Length: 167
View 1: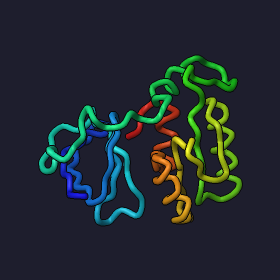
View 2 (view 1 turned 120 degrees about the horizontal axis):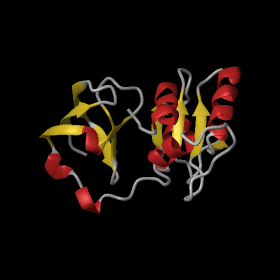
View 3 (view 1 turned 60 degrees about the horizontal axis):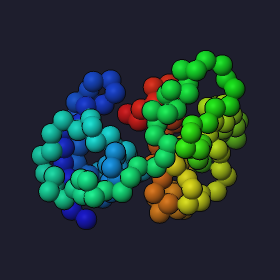
């Protein structure tokens, strides 16, 4: 795969230049790794301000659809008040937490379940997100990537629950 380079505006309005050496895309996101990244990062296509290199490599309309349900479905559910389990009309997002202490992972799992997400202990083809901590094992990350899941940090996960967006 070839290099893609772009200017990206994150959810805080900060514009940065990104260069991905390994990347893939779907209809809503580009996910990839820069030279210094331990794990891939996910970028919303609608937040890309300008392509500097490799725009011709994008699949555009031919890109596969993003995993369902969309993060915006979670935001709408979060706005519905109480902490009862909520599910979108397309079924729950499926998430796996890895690389966290047992107590913190348990807290994250309860939070995810409270927002209607299904929590897994091992990667599967239905996986939507893999949320990684400092001690994440590479085999789970590879399996999650093969399943087409988004690889996110705990901060990205909390932002997703709060705003419905991936930074």
